[in-house]
Length: 143
Length: 143
DNA sequence: CATTTTTACTTCAAGCTTCAAATTTTAAGC
DNA sequence: GCTTAAAATTTGAAGCTTGAAGTAAAAATG
Image (cartoon, rainbow over all chains, first blue to last red; front, side):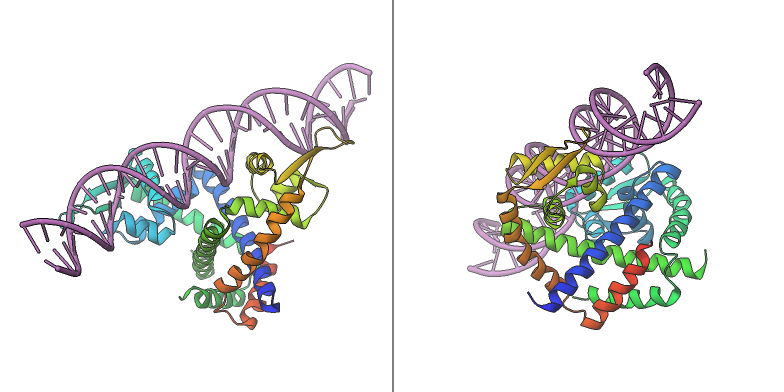
């Protein structure tokens, strides 16, 4: 194996570690302070962003999870009154998902705390680090 | 919310995206080419690294997963003959886990492919990017 | 010592996640 | 039009994951 691949493997291991730690922190934060879960937060965040015209496929593509997964998380949010499904008029295969007013309010009350928790998690990076890393990640993403 | 926290949130979103994409790629790779899963690979990799004297607690701490999780993944590896548990002599609460010779061989046949898959995933980063990002992640990891 | 607290691990229930299969609908190629 | 292929979703089985509760053993406390 080449030198380069070893360095990339080390990068990957660190990347995974930092991400898992952050996810664990955020999971804990959401559980303790808002009695909710990370997957639910992620779905709500996606629905909040694209406020309308979000299909199930859009959702799972955006979150990088399977269709089946999106289905059950939305099922639960729906049964809690936080999300709502609406069939499309033009394509009867398609289902739109959106937050209900309750879901919207719930997400807004979560979002600020989530953001400051993220800030806390990455507090030991200075602003330069943050920008450099964001740029590198952008470069890694494009495919 | 401060400017800094918004930038850190953007960083986090990108970080999560890149990590998920990589995980999905690796999961697919392991499934298609070796008929195994990411959690099993992660456990085997941890056991391979610390070749001996690895307890269940060490394992879950190392992988940043819960104790209950480590238990079931090791259960399955054990029932497939790839891992083995050994009670400690000095502390009867403690259980050591290790790869069997079969597990060792299985991991070695996985590792090279995994490494080149990781290299492929991060191929669009040049060596400078890789080193800079590794350094920043080290800093983020905290002490 | 006896008691309490901490530590290591397992078990359990609930929720998450994937993949594959099934359903329904639309689009494309004859 | 008819047939086949492709797309959007849901369902179901199996595996993953967590947090909490349970068991047992070791360490700390008085």
